[in-house]
Length: 146
Image 1 (cartoon, helix red, strand yellow):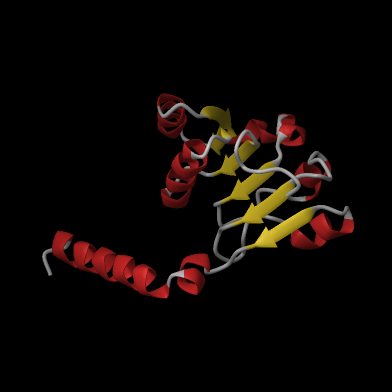
Image 2: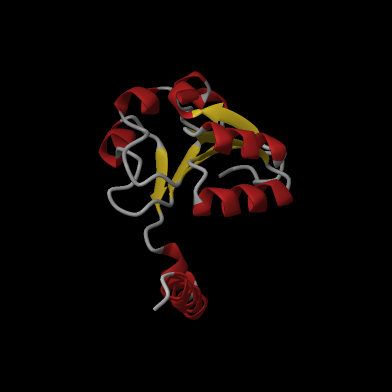
């Protein structure tokens, strides 16, 4: 991007595990964080955390205002209609697992900059990622009484 994340206007699609961590990190470095979610309790938490909540069905209204858009939802959110509303100087980063949330072919056709960051934790920090995975598996087994 030709600008830094500090003071940028960022949109995060989804408020699951990745969306929660990412919104906190972006907010911490000074981005103006907007988060789109479906569930009312997620929207309430988004606002409580100091981010700007957007109802997922309303994202098309706002897409042309963001410098960077992060997707964390593993199904298509940014399809032809939504992509048409995104500025050409914006960057779209898809962090979701397959099939991802961006129609990459259509984005390329209309000249949008995209990055599909599949398996990012394992690629950049395999030891830390393996530790988190191990801890999660053990927690699930313990919670199940196994």
